[in-house]
Amino acid sequence: MKIIGTGRAHPAKVVTNAMLEEFLDTSNKWIVERTGISERKLITNERLEELAVKASLLAIEDAGLKPKDIDYIICSNVVNEYITPSLSCIVQGAIGAKCACVDVNVACAGFVYALDMADDRIKCGKAKNILVLAAEEPTRMVDWSDRATCVLFGDGAGAVVVTEGEGYMGSRLSAVSMTDSLHYMRCLEPTPYITKEELSAPMYMNGRQVFKTAVMLSSRDIKALLADEGLAPEDIKYYILHQANMRIIEAVANHMELDMSYFPHNVEYCGNTSSASVALLLDELHRAGKLQRGDKLILSAFGAGFTTGTCLIEWTK
Ligand code: UT7
Image (cartoon, rainbow, N blue to C red; front, side, top):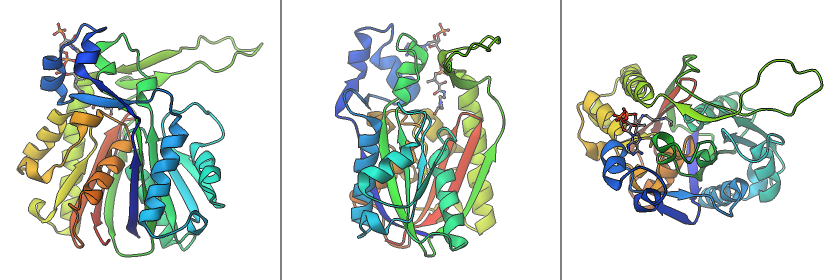
């Protein structure tokens, strides 16, 4: 498969570190030094599906297609206001597509997993033009009195359209069950028969453990994928990593013995937008004219699970 269009949508509200200082025991200095984040965009009166629709329509337009040309939709999403129907199904109706659609929840690694699923579906001849999107509102999962988590996140939606072609060169996906280090639980509706204790708790994250695991597994997967493809680290134009923390991106660059010019970033003004982050950054680079035909790109993300997804793309647009 190959990517033929990209799009993105951000919420309108920009929340700076100074605005967080007003109600949290935190500082701009701490947040910038530990995360690289200066501001993030947060959902206020928008609905996540509206951002998802906007990103999708931009990607379809960029691909030179119409919504009726899309024959499958894969949406990476962790939470939104609907438990059911799926976000992909809501987007399908709103954009006027008629195809089958599915949501995947692989936490922040979901966009790369979704791309990999799209590649499989195209390879087996079951679809021609697939909309792959990632729409996330992680700011609704955290406790806004918990300074260790709420300062990290932002919301947004990114999308690509893929079709038959030679742009997806390989991937590495992994999952290790480590539920203790990062999770978010919601109580379901009561029934007259439930006797177990159920928890409803905002996001819990052991930041240090996630940090170390992310650096170790991302570096491992990227090196393994490069070896699979017989490529040197310098053969890649950009490493488009999950935008969780600037220090994680710098640590991976260090492991790869590459300077930061290979690692574009937008975490400083978007925060961690979960699985949307890689899709948002890809669109930003494309629309800024920074991607040339033939460029090799590594997309790599990690998330709760613990899950990782890394793929190698040749830019063919
Ligand atoms: O996509 C989801 C994946 N998640 C991630 O990628 C997160 C990965 N982890 C991280 O990015 C970092 O671990 C954090 C940014 C979350 C935390 O940075 P850290 O350098 O690991 O700090 P820490 O958790 O060890 O905390 C150091 C200190 C603590 O105070 P004490 O115990 O040393 O007195 C915290 O209470 O910093 C304190 N602290 C804060 N201080 C000011 C934690 N959050 C804040 C804050 N402002 N917002």
